[in-house]
Amino acid sequence: MVSVDTLKKLDIFDGLPVSELKVIADISDVESCPRGTMAFSENREAKKLYVLLEGKVVIQFEVGRHQDAVVHTVAPGQAFGWSALVQPHKFTASAKCTEDCKLLTVDREGLRRLLEEDCRTGFIIMEKLAEIISMRLRDTRLQLISMIHG
Image (cartoon, rainbow, N blue to C red):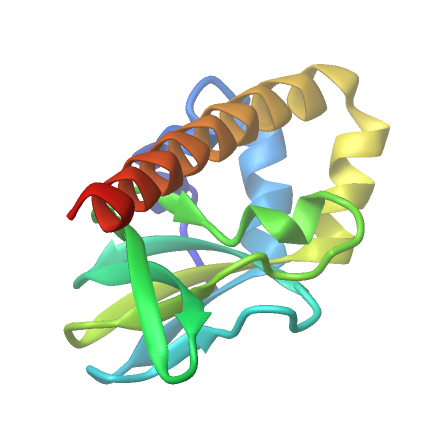
């Protein structure tokens, strides 16, 4: 189980009341992933939202046969795997642990129920998710420009 104090330190949950953090703690786990582990793969069903607690994760997608483009490096405290909360709940990229990692995982169904029940909490989290998606789009655009103009 995850502590409320841990959740308070994470940007995606900043501003939420303790009562909501307790609900999130109940639907969260911590997973240890050794270097080289794929936290998730592109086009797979997104059942969890992730937050990096320790280590380093890269977000990448396949651009050609056996060739991947890294579009973002996740820093500790940052959320990733936003596809869990956005239809059609399929990952749009892959996440690879490039160091030994500790990941906070939040169950999609439990979190969606919370967001539907409490509109304020839903707004706060979805607004932060929109920021993450915007950042990923910007990073992907920069990566594509770099690949084209070498």
